[in-house]
Length: 333
Image 1 (cartoon, rainbow, N blue to C red):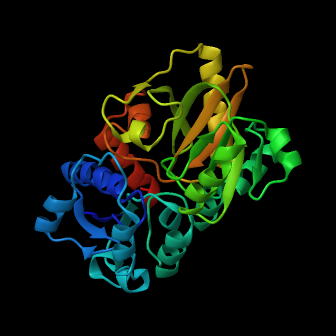
Image 2 (cartoon, rainbow, N blue to C red; image 1 turned 135 degrees about the vertical axis):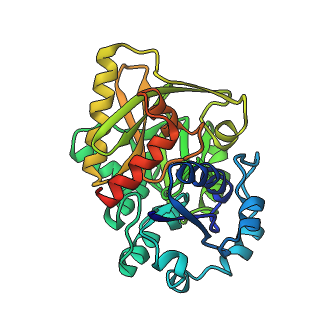
């Protein structure tokens, strides 16, 4: 019986999202016959009682407070954690984690140094995808359309080039935490401060009206294209994790030719950023008919209602099989 340790929790603003995904992944893997242990990066190995208390398949309407996260962060010690039997004796590590620290390459570097096999992209791919400024530079070099942007601080000339409204967001974060849509110059300082509370590097990006599309990638295959129709102007944290705040339609109601083009584009992004095992590639279909790549996600959400599991299900891959395939890809079985 293969021993899989699910890594989850941690001290990022997306902690609750990670725990909700872990609840589903742990259940799915056990049903497939794996011997599963669970480790919270902030609390260590979880007992069955702690699992029952922490792993719940729902996400709070708002992310954890910074005070709560700071207390958790003070307890984290990854170098000590990788010496835990649950990690060093596992056949495979399965991260169900979100946020800059755990998706951006730091955790992957620690796991690689410890010699463990793990699901998801390695240090290189994680770093390229998490840094939105760097990944967008790569998109341009490969002729992959992306929204015009600039790094903060920006000059008046750059603001004129980008125009209003603007998306102001952390350069290295997920779940739209710290992101604002700014319509007047007077609102820029507060938007910058909000983004800087998550990451010191901030991007200004032209807001593109249009349809929100997303594609899962599994192995070397693009999955179904989905469309997101959010109650808010953007697919923000509340819309993502509050029931009824968005419609997620798989497959998207678009032409077969456009579907093929977007799936091909998603694979190009996945390969360009040197990602492995799985990813989610997000697009905006602009009013000009161009499909712009917004970003790539190396550790996308893994609740049953998250976007990538829905993308897989629309291709006839149920959630348990999806999790099993990820393990086999990582183990090269």
